[in-house]
Image (cartoon, rainbow, N blue to C red; front, top):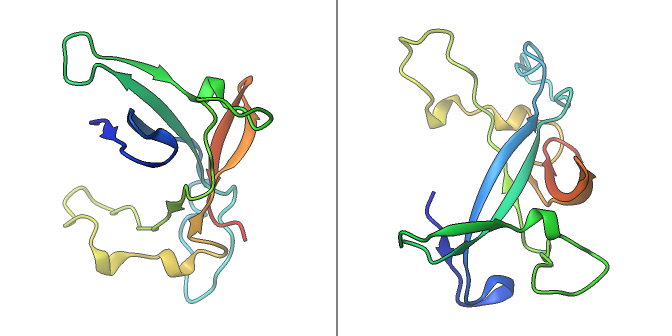
Length: 140
């Protein structure tokens, strides 16, 4: 994934790359919600937002520094990430029963079956010994 050049905001003057990593997903069989019933997915889907500062992008010496390991809410510093305005939008689609199926289409979307929010803000939590930004779907 290509880094984004920011001209304003908290990352102004920097090249930043973002990555979402799934750390928890619903159990198989609980993803499908029959009929019009809405219920929470169990356990709720959770993704981790990884943020990288990209140095010398597009050159042979390109490198990255992961900012997640430096997150802090108690002090203002160049690596503090403001979570206001960071959003993750969720859409649910059924997994095709066959590899011969035509694939995922907009008409197959099942987001309306999700109980809770489909657009969420991250939570800053301790995860694996570091502060991380996690998005939890279907809570709310």
